[in-house]
Image 1 (spheres, rainbow, N blue to C red):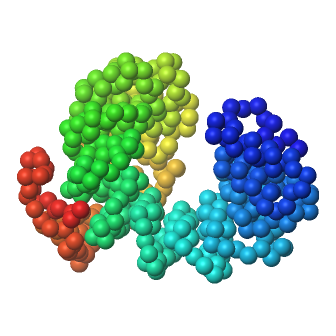
Image 2 (cartoon, rainbow, N blue to C red):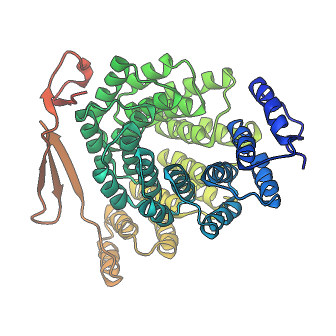
Image 3 (cartoon, helix red, strand yellow):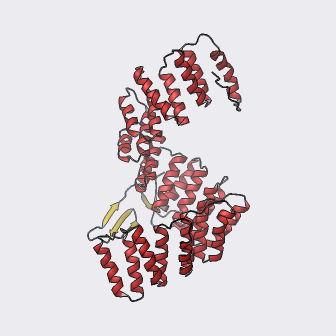
Length: 487
């Protein structure tokens, strides 16, 4: 049969165990226990292909598998991504009336969850006579993965007992679904329940804080990490950098960056981009040079940050040099976002005509973002001719976006062509294009007020889960009406 005959380095631990497996394998009298011993042994050392071959040999020998066998076989299928084999095992379980105990049930739920088949996972869960916390966690993760957060939260709320995996699965689900406020709120509840977060939890909640601009919450999480010794790996470090940069605290981001023992390209890219968008263009370029000197390969994201830095600093020629070096030096084929950055680079400096010529020579068809960058620059510099060209393309690509009409209307108004400005507004109305209402929010002393242009839409949300403080624990540069999480 050739089990284990593939030539590859095996760990010493397996060689010791292999001797026992060979004895079982060479035995002339092999019962179910013997086969399960073989299958479990190979599974323990991640020899998943051999596990499946053993099962084929076992069935050929007319030995009926049990739940123990099925756990290892389905686990092997999950690691190999062999879903056809996995489905055949589900069929085998039904045809042979194998009892689905808690271990086999959990394995099936996990397998379906990996495949985003949450309804099938739910079916297994519902049929299980016995469940443990692993069962609940696996199903919560399965529903969260497919974006069914209502079902995931209902399960989470009904759990008889929760551990850090339970909380983290739900928080991560909210964060990945862009429900950042819910992620932060649930994290606060986790802290109130005195459940210690792990590195996955803090990375997820820091991502939510970054998107919401919740500097105080992010800082409190950072403080908790240091105070309670949460393992801060490269992913947590990158999340801290991203959070501080998006909250405008570039100095804190640099502090985290320089203290990180291990850095990857994401670490460098995050801090370079953060410096760029916060107006520290020269520092971003200096850090990029240091990145290259240290032999770190830049990514597509790195060049977005560099091109943004050049655009903000007005370094047109330098930016074009970096753009050209992407493919010629680093072997990176520019994507649409890089072409958009170059159009922005040229447009910001007043080179509207060059920006348009650059667009016409693009090897890929420009998208709405590229044309909108040009149109915005035309409004700023009063270039009506190119504004009309850009608007025409935008209306072909995205006729339902009110911004296209408004930008050209404002461009006409900027050069006193009021009749044309009114015509664009009328065209927008005739096309039944709705202009979304503007909104804003402000948070003061634990109260969040949301304002909208629509009449009567003032909403005030009170949050009592924080205490307002101005503590010496918070850096002076971050003083104000800050809230302190009880963690």
